[in-house]
Length: 281
Image 1 (tube, rainbow, N blue to C red):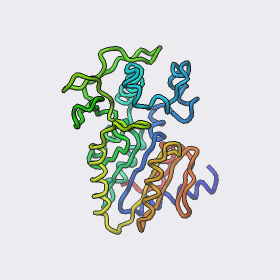
Image 2: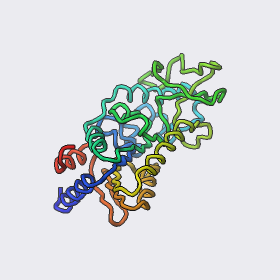
Image 3: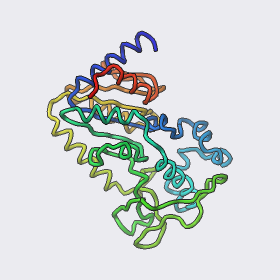
Image 4: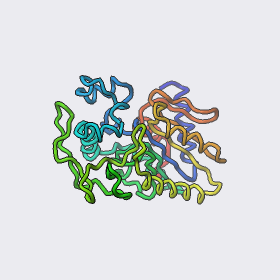
């Protein structure tokens, strides 16, 4: 790392150590060091899922709710594989670093993430301190909307043909009407997503922010790109709050507003470098 990079790492470590509360903001890049696929661009997606190259379908094409009506085996092939993958993935050590830092702050820690993989819960973050703004693949909803509540995907497994990435029957079903279920994930152009769970998480997030008062807050943003900017926009909106600093960790998009700290690199590597400069919590 360059001298300038070393200086910024040191500055970031001091800001995090000095803060009285921690907001973790995370996008898809947070999970790459845990072995999750990198979906940046069509090539990255197709390297992870070669069968979709033959169909000329990329992530943005497949993350569309219309497939559940048009071709449910294709839809559940994509989401069923991801459900199994996320269940099998072990969160990398950077999650524990963040949890330890947040746990040592008088104002505690909250997580705002666009990830639907449940990795923060698996890493031990409190369920009531996580806002999943795009929902969770670990919860299901009725495609037909016969019920307005959600149910956990625990115990639901989807068999997927690895050659075609198509799901085999039986597909997940609504326990009330018996019709097709879908993940409670906000997709592109998704007017059928049920936001109730995410909205309640958002209410708890706002309650936490209000309780902080004027204490020093640091935002540590990991792996949030500009292609789906929900997380970056939240981080930057938070800068309107007094005594708030942003530490943005991103492999290729580490640009920050004036006065904030951008660190170019992967989440795990940068978090470990920061930890080496900070006192143990």
